[in-house]
Amino acid sequence: MSDLRFLIVDDFSTMRRIVRNLLKESGFTDADEAEDGVVALHKLRNGKFDFVVSDINMPNMTGFQLLAEIKKDDKLKHLPVLMVTAEARKEDIVLAAQQGAAGYIVKPFTKATLEDKVTNILKKMGLQ
Amino acid sequence: MSADLAPSEVGTTPPEIHHKIGVLTRQLHDSLSGLGLTEKLQGTASELPDAKSRLTYIARLTGEAAEKVLNRVDQAKAQHDHIAAETRRLAALIVKDPVAAVAKGHVMNFVTDVEQATKEIDQHLTEIMMAQDFHDLTGQVIARVVNLAATIEEQLVQLLIETAPPSAAKTAAAAAAAAPEYKPALAGPVVNPEGNTDVVTDQSQVDDLLASLGF
Image (tube, rainbow over all chains, first blue to last red; front, side):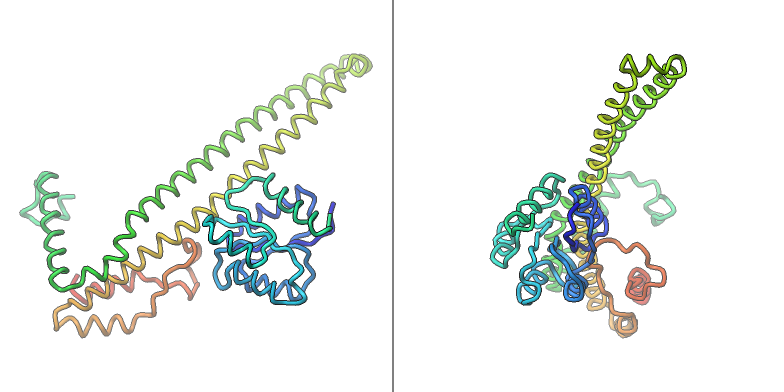
């Protein structure tokens, strides 16, 4: 069991629940949720998190905007942000990478894909 | 059906009704073209084929999700039934001769069986959970189609106001001005409209407006 704390950001509660359950099955049991970038940013600034899993297409603040805010903030920019989204355009993938996203998963995805991405990112960061 | 038709149309056959609808559509198109108003709807109308494909996508995704879930449930139930049957069989063996049940390996075999079955059932449950991702994917598509429908509706209402006869125009404009601002939904269908002041009951507002124009 890992003690890393995840923040799952998606405007669809079903998707947040799916990601949460998959993370739990992979050994990451500590997770919180946010329904958009605004709520996510508030939680990140007022809590302690180690990893962000975020959708892109959300009201109030998109995943790209959230990513930009995280990377602008000295206290948050170290956080790995894994984009999990239905946006499959190449330009979005390139943009996410240019903005500093740690990974990009396109929906629909499998448990193995999420597990691989999270594990690889944590290994790269020396957190696993 | 006949109650909704004008007296002259009672008993009209479907091809004739279709012809009448075609004539009306042509008249509407010509009227709108004459007024130079078709362009306003052109942009959104051109998105209609895209809307159709989106709705087809939604139907396909929900169908596939239902199929996936039902298949997994069938498989999980089969394994569950197998374990239930093996449990009854082992219970009978233990009652008959508990020492033999262990010595002959029945208990150990059962334990191995249960371990394997629970792994597989767990996998089925995970796949059933994953199949719910259709909710997110279809929800985003539905939001786009709803937005399109709302835009077309808004533009048609605006057209009605602009093309209303002078006597009705003032009333219609006043009714439209009095109506709360219509905000099309951005993401997915509204689930709980009751008591939600952010949800505009736009159909009744549209109905009021149309009624004021004599429709």
